Structure formats: structure tokens, C-alpha cells
Length: 363
Image (tube, rainbow, N blue to C red; front, side, top):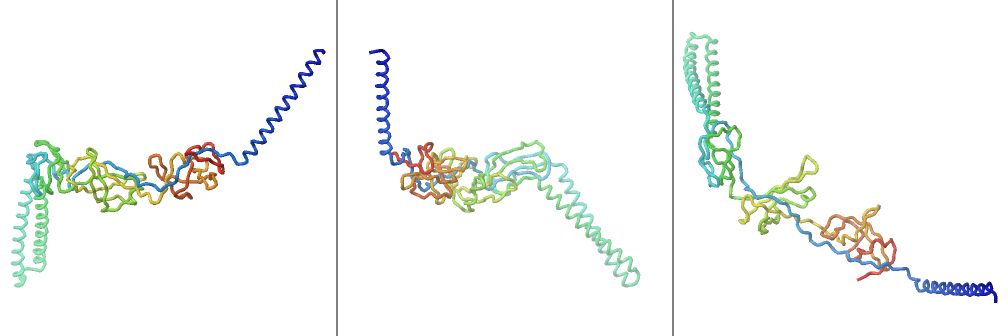
């Protein structure tokens, strides 16, 4: 047998074997399609939609201060002559705390007194002259014009005496301002000027604080003040010890002329555990209402907005648009959405899903 005949024989056998192999593969594919009439299920993990748990209070830091406090000043300028108190000293309302020396106050007061006495004497003399003039006018000795002149002079002197009396009162009040008195009972917190130093009018000399009541002021964003009301109880924690107490909302800002500002909120503290200057934190509860929460990993972002894949009773998934109103750790708090408590949403395997795909829930 020739070499060409042998090669042709082997080629025929190889073609026949390859054809049988293709036929076997075709039969296997048909069997696989027959077995896989059900759509391919994507393995995913799902979590139940549950009601939102009570959120931890938001904490805002502040420092304790006295409810009644004042920076005391003189209304006149001068040199601080003496000071009768020290830091931390308890004083009563009306006590003299410091004295100021001003060389113009006492002479101005004495001059005003002398001017008032002078005008009063002149007015008294004019009154007697008017009385004699009326008698002479009745006898026909004095003319009407002269009597009217005497009356006008008396009225002018009375008016000048009234003006001098007001000036004397002003100088007496200014002279009294040379003594600094306590407006209320409390303790001296700070001394800002030493004796011998010059004090300008309105310059703070010392700070006084009452120990009768304490308060703390914090500033909160606008979206939180809607759930607050004056008189409401709020938790307060000590930043140092962590001890908790209860405060009452005294004042609450309700408006601002600038955008994006924080609103002041003043809380009274009745607990004896706090002192003026302590660092504290005020808690504000967040009203979550009937909101639902899902794992944060279940929320996906797309061009159409935020959405989740909800698992249906048929074992498929449906894309549901959602809005996230808040976050609690790894949980997303949903706003208004078609989801209901008890629904299941996919939180693992999202990248392989499309709307309507069949899924297999993994443990």
C-alpha cells in the first residue's frame, strides 16, 4: 500500500472521530438546556426592613455659668482709690465693692448746691416784691406793666431754680457713682483693675456671679428646634465625670437674620453636682417617627437616585426608589418609601443584579 493511501485512511478516521465528538457535545448541551428550564438564580444575601430604633441623643457642648452675672463698671472715669473685696468673696446686694476718685465730682456737686440756694433766695425775694407790687397796684401807685414784669421775673427765677435742682441731682448721682455697689448677692469671680489704675467710664472693673442658679448655653442647628419647647426636660452630662442630670429649657432662639447660623438655647441646671465653669454636654432627642431602617450597604446610587432591591414572593427582585433621611451607624433611616416593615432587601451581591432577576437567598 502506498504512503498516500495510508495518509488518506488516517485522515478519514480523524474526521469521523471529530464528528462523533461534536455530536456528543451537542447532545450534552441539549440536556443542559432541558435541565435548566428555570432561570439562573443569583446568590445574594438579604436583610429584613425593620422599624428604626430610638436614636442616641445628639450632644452639644457648653460650659456652666451663673444665671445672674454681671461685669461691674463705673459710669464716670477716675482712679480706682480702694477695693473692699477679693476673688471668691461673698457679698450682699448694696455692699460697697470699690471706690473711685475723680477731682471734678465733689466740686461740681457743691457748685450745683450753691447755685440752687442762690436762685431760691432770688425767687423768694421776687415773691415778696410781687406781693408788695400787688398792694401798690390796688392803690393805683404801680402800673399794670410793672406788675407784669415782677410776675415774669418771679416765674423765670422759679424755672431757673428747677433747672438748678435737676443739675444738683445729676451731680449727686454722678458723685454716688464713684462708689461701686453690688447689684445682687453673689461671689466675686474676677478682679480686672487694681487700685491706683485709671478707669475709663464703662470699663469693667470686676465680675460678680450669683450662686442661686446655674445655666448652660449651647447652639443648635435650625432643624432641631422644631421639636423643642420652653420648659422641656433635657439630659445633661458632665464632660469630666459622665454623671447625668436633668435640665430645663429656659430660652430658645426662634429666628436669625443670617442664613446658616446656629440658634442659642439656654438650659437651667438645678443639680448640686455642677459648678460654674464646668464643661457639660446637653442632649437633644431626635424624633424618628415611624421611619424604617435598612443596612446601609443595601442602598445603591444610580443616575435615577437612591434605590434598593426588594425580594418578592416569587423569588425575584424589584428595584424600589428610596430616600435616606438619616444614618444610625451602619443603618440607613428611610424617608417616605413603598417599603413596608417585614420586607427583605438585598445587601450583598448587588453588582450582579438587574431588575426582575431571580435570586437565591444565602444564609
